[in-house]
Length: 212
View (cartoon, rainbow, N blue to C red):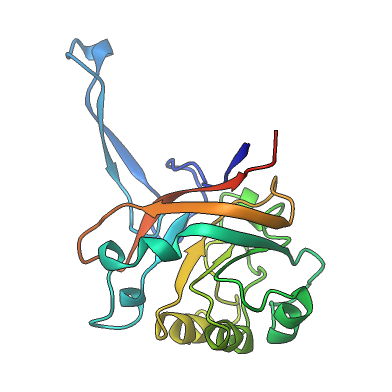
C-alpha cells in the first residue's frame, strides 16, 4: 500500500491565520540538560486541522467528542483544479460524489496559495450552495486544501461554516493534496483530543491499499 501524508508541517514560519506558532526551548542537551524539551504555543486551528461544530455553534459538539467514524474510513479526493472560482453545488453534482461520506476537494490551492507562508488575497473555497448540497447529501466530513474552506469573499459572514457546522458536518482544512491523485482512498484523520475545544490540529493521511 502507499501512504500519503496530507499534513502540513508546523513551524514558526508556516502559513497561518492570526499568530504564528512560537517555540520555546525549555531544556537542551547542548546546554547541559538531560534531554531536549520544547514548549509550543499554537492555536487549535494551526496547520492541518479539523473544525468541530463548537467552532461556530455555542453548546455544540467539541472536538474531543466528535465521532471518529466520521474521520476514519473511505474517502474520495475530487479534482477541482480546473475551477477558477469557488466550488458550487453544480460542481459537486458534476463530480458524481453523491453518497460519499468523506470528500476532499483538490483545487489549485494545493500547488499555489498553500505553498506560501502568507495568506493569499484569494483562494478557492466552498460556495454556500455547495455547503447546503453537502448537508443534503449526508456528507460527514468535507476537506479542502487551504487555511479555510470559506470563500475569500465571505470571511466576515462565514456562510459555509454556519451551514456545515450547524449541521454537524466536520471540516478538514489545510489538507495538502498536491501529491495526491484524484480517486478513492482510506482517510485516517486524528485530531488531538483537546477537551471542550472548537477544533484541533491533526495528523491526516490517505491510504491507497493498491499502491506501491
